[in-house]
Image 1 (cartoon, rainbow, N blue to C red):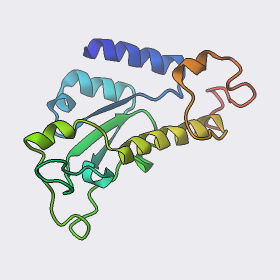
Image 2 (spheres, rainbow, N blue to C red):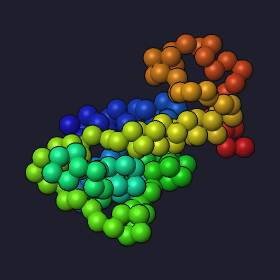
Image 3 (cartoon, rainbow, N blue to C red):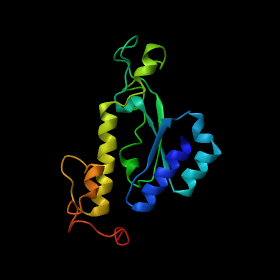
Length: 165
């Protein structure tokens, strides 16, 4: 599966330098230490950001209903502005005096993203597109299928060679 991912990711990055590739796994996942993963991230200039689930509204739903779950995640990304949105850590004991353990019936539920995290991801990518293409996107990003529409960005884009200028 990793070989398939890297093939698609490399094609994506080669096609347009503004494309963003992200990888998300729990912070303690052993995949982060695999040589093939480390080499790929280094080769393509990925930046890693650590975040805590409780900072994005992750809380117990069963045994520990309403109690924050700290679950640490790591996101590796090619987007230079993701750190503005995807690096929140636990606000501390004043706000979260205790955390529920990510265990038993809570574990499966922590596999899904909270709405605040979903919104942070979309806001981060919207910010990236706005900066790269120098125009404002309204309520959402263009669907990838819309990228085949040559009029979508007509007169609004800059070439990748001049995008940073």
